[in-house]
Image (tube, rainbow, N blue to C red; front, side):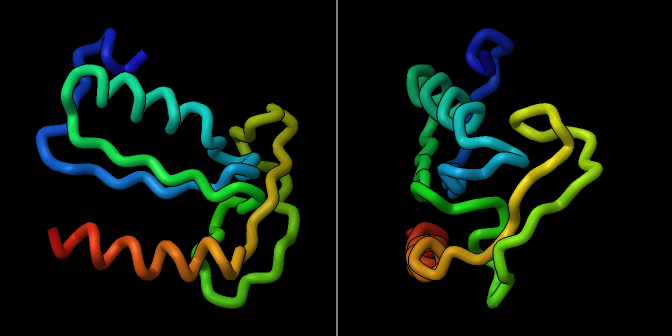
Length: 100
């Protein structure tokens, strides 16, 4: 766990991740955020259910990427593509977060 290694956020951190991301899954991000918050770090996590990697890319059709060195299922296959609702939320959320 990150907290066991002494990791903490010195400044506020916002993590936005797709709940269906099978390239860099949401669970490690969730663990990082929970451990950091337990240590008093200002880490905010938003998981977008059903969204894949690159959910915030403009107009990227959902497709498979193959031959990847790391994927959640360890099979080298992951999905990428725009999730319009998650993208819209992220485009609102990030400027608001940076404006704080």
